[in-house]
Image (cartoon, rainbow, N blue to C red):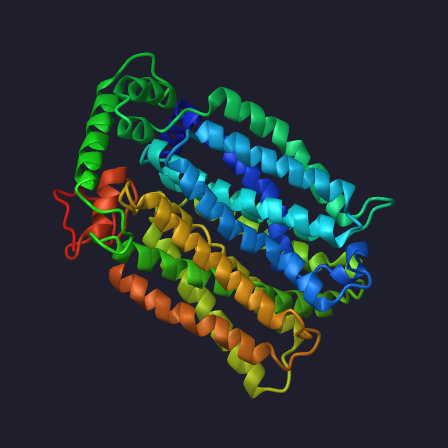
Amino acid sequence: MGCTEWVEANQKNKPQSNAIGAGVLTLLATGMYHAGTLYDPGYKNHEWTYNRSDSAILVTLLLFHISAILGSFTGWFLIERYTKKQINFVIISFVVIGCTVSIALSHNLIGIAFARALMGIAHGMAYLVVLIHGGEILIKELRGVIMASINFCIISGVLIGGAMNTVKVEALEPYQWLGIIGLAYMPIAFFLNLIVCYESPVFLMKRNLDSDAIRSMMKLRNESSETWEIRNEMTEFKTMLSEDASTTRSIFRDGNLRPLVLIALGKIASVLSFNYAVNSIKVNVIEEVLDINETNARLSIIIVTSIRMIVGMCAMFLVDVLGRRALQLVSIVSTGVILVAIGIAYIVTDSITPDLGMAIFLACEVGASLGLTFIPDVLCSEAFNTKKKALSIVAVQVLENVLHVAVFAVVFKWDFTVSDRYGGTLLVAGLPPLVIGYMLYRKLPETSKMSLRQARIEFYKREGIVFGGSKNSVEVLYD
């Protein structure tokens, strides 16, 4: 597909991206609160931390991830019973309340804890709903780029949160800024959800609402009548649902363990490359070069996250061209090699020139931005049996949040202004991705330009999986 054809296809299929717009805006708002456990923006200077113990501050910051786990399970319970539009209204309500509390009680630890908990619940629910909804409504030619844009929006939220958390402007506290910006997104999310959030045909067909499913598909494909492409897609959905009807709901049976493990490995590599410990090292090295000493002017946070966001934006347009597998492998291996190399250098030598360290870390950010964080989201949307999909994605999300909690809890009190811990930390973060990269090289199939059913079958095959390009699959081969 050439550039002109791609633009035309994107414009014609705009209703599909609009349908998940409310969820994406929600993740943009909640991503700002995620920044609190990815960077150290000088929380000791925030009024809500005054005269509070380190343990109280730690728990308050971790509430986002703990609540995100609760939100994931809540989303799993709701998504089997209610429409996406109804669930999105619940999520938007959580965000509105969380942002309002963040504005009103920005000086109070209990208020910040409550706001972060609500935003965590909204984050867990929205992440699950968007991945499932997007995977079921997007055409195969655009599924990769649109699903990758979800992670791009989260990173954008992290950038805004990291920037605003470091600055106190006049009478407004950092969390008040986050609340105001988050509230600004919600009217747009509300009207997108109200007007253009069309239900997934797969969800409707599960409930034997075939006529409603056809009408929804026509709106999503921007067609005024039932075309033969729509008929073919509907037939494939029916086939997929009939195949899944004979399986159990266990996420560890019927061949589901393989995609679950592969995507979980991708998430582990993602967290190892983008966590509080690794980011703190990068930020401090860059600050040493830029000679930034004030905690309220941490330009380094903006530099690091901007690279991840800008390069990631370019890479997500290649995910349907070069494929998921190639981008993820290049991203994982390059990041792992750089982290291991500089980790060994820090262990072997007394010190590394800050200029050289900064250049290496910026190169690491470029490599990590090529697909390490967003490819697992794309694969989540297309790899699982429809009966097991929600709980499988929840399991992956829970793993991701548990890892963030573990890393943050262990290193929260570490002093990253000295380089004594740099080598060991970077080595621990870099070695597992190399092992994971090899395992994905051997087992991860390529699913670009495949229909939802074809992509799922590729993951469930025991032999003969596709490693490059696309190929029609002929049968389901369960374990």
